[in-house]
Amino acid sequence: MVQFNNFRSLIYNVWSSYTDCSRRTMEDASCQDATIMDYWRNRLFVNAMTVSLPLSIIAVIPSIIIEVNAGYYFVALLDILVMGLFFTLVLTPGISLIWRKISVGILIAVFAVLLFALMGSFSMGCIYLFALSIFIVLQYSGTTAFAGVIFNLVVCICFAVILNFKIFPLPLHSMITLQRWVLYSSNFLFLDLILVALIRQLLDGLEQTITKKSVLYRRLEDELILKNVANNLLIQSEEHYKTLFSQSPLSICIYDKDTLRFLQVNEAATRTYSYTEHELLNMTLSSLELPQGEGGNQQKLIDTDVISASAQQEIAVHLKKNGEPIHVEIKSSDFNFQGRDARLIITTDITEKVSHHIAIKKQNEKLKQIAYMQSHVVRVPLANIMGLTNLIMEDIPEKQKEIFNYLTMAAKQLDDVIRDIVNLEE
Image (tube, rainbow, N blue to C red; front, side):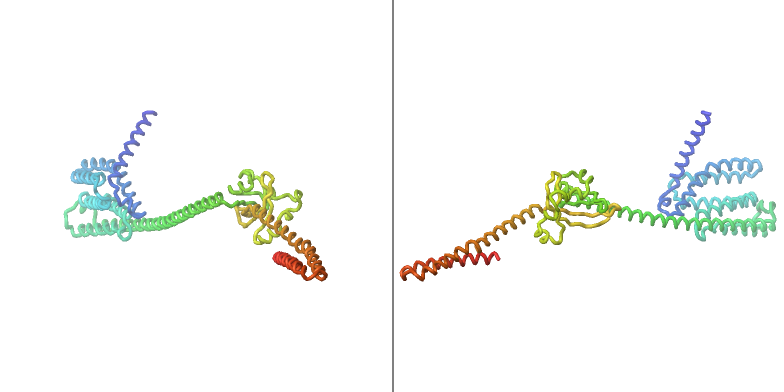
């Protein structure tokens, strides 16, 4: 068993080396640059010649022995010559594949004609003529595919003329009559034409199928290329979005509209609320909002003037991780995120702005109180002073009236100043 396996392995290695060598010898650029059908025709020819070479040896050796025993020495010599030419065509490098095909076709045609002429064997000659027709129809397309049938018709007609007029003294005259030649050749040509036509139709259908598949394959390749380009653009777009999202200086959060759970947050959001990204992704928007039970209604903590000044935005009070409340200005937009109804919010900490606004408001309240005191508290005693001055001036001498006039003028000037302050406040 081991010896058989070793022998089989040896045969396989020898055959593989032979086939690789013969294919490298016969194949040229036409095998790669041709169309699909021409490519397969070329491969079929190369494979056929590779297999035919060793098989022809098995077929020729018995033929030579039988021909020598029968006295057909010239035919045996012809077999050896054809065999040598066949080996040369298959194994000689540098010959183009086109010329190898033409040479093989000519070699088969000449050998068939010589078999008719030298051996007078209709059956042997028809076998090779039939092989010539099959070879041509498999290797060529269009009307050229029927060249073998036309050649066979010409050969049959020529030998019929030779048999009828006995132009050459051939062994064929003693082997077959003209009537039998016409009978045999007409049936042979009929079958030859039918078979070639069927093979041609089969190859045409195969070529159309291969062409359609090739077109579909190219379209599929184009679609795959476009799809890959679109995927690459999508990936680049996603990377660009992630970069803009994560590196944005604005605090951005995405949450599920149904559950209010955060789906994605950026670094700015973690800095705003002092939570880590992991902590925020395990929280909801409600977790950041000021509870209603703590500090009263949230809306009461938001100054009404701040709300009116930011009428286009939403103002809310959120809590940082340490519990510190902050005023935030919220811009939102609804969209679909990973198959969910989500909302993107951009929160801006406006606590300093609100504090500044409240400070200004308090300062204005103080100014109003000062103006009120000036208009009601300070002005009343001033009016009393002015009234008393007028009463005193009625009873004092003329020399002292000048002093009280100055006092009255100073009081009026002070009254004008207070009035101007009150008017500015109003």
